[in-house]
Image (cartoon, rainbow, N blue to C red; front, side, top):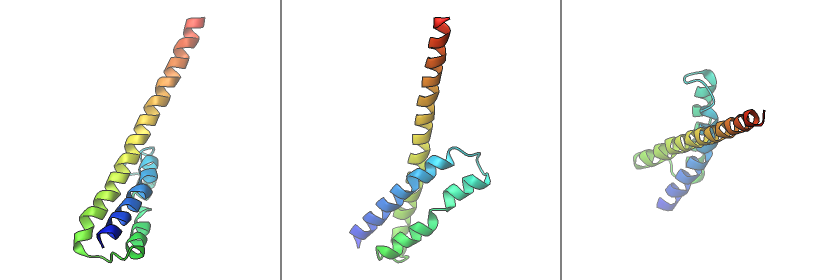
Length: 100
């Protein structure tokens, strides 16, 4: 049972990383922001069913933590890549100014 819980939590985490990435691109509390948070929930329920976890109380802290950690990781990944992209754009603009 514990191995199934770990696998379900890992699947939940991996599923939520792209949703967290997308969520970061929208205004907080907008419709798309809410969709990015709530769209993976049916899949988490499916994972619980497929891995035979049921809805036992001891599984909730682990699964909820995996859910939000995946969202958080996706958010931080988006922030990192956006900053990197902005830095490259600034460097390109600075080199164009130096040439003229």
